[in-house]
Length: 134
Image (tube, rainbow, N blue to C red; front, side, top):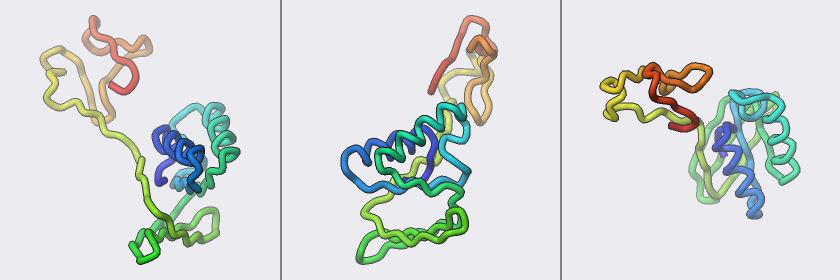
């Protein structure tokens, strides 16, 4: 699994619990870098207990298809890993789907990160609220 955000962690843990040996590769230090650290630490401990191998601070990732499978080479904390795997899942982020849904006509501002809200989850149109993956 490449990418240790919420989606990557969820899939890595699910496949590990199904019995697969899972390598979770993340470029940042630790998992779920944009989430609450205490929550991310709990998830990380659980995934390690479930058998997920975490390769954080992964640098210089290269993927090559071979007869034996898909070969990944990656540096993690100064050590180089050379792995042959059956499949690769990529979960390296999401992009909001805000185009063409009438946000401008509704008076709702957005940017490349999604719909803008205040601390009460109210958009720039005071009668519209937004929460979660919208």
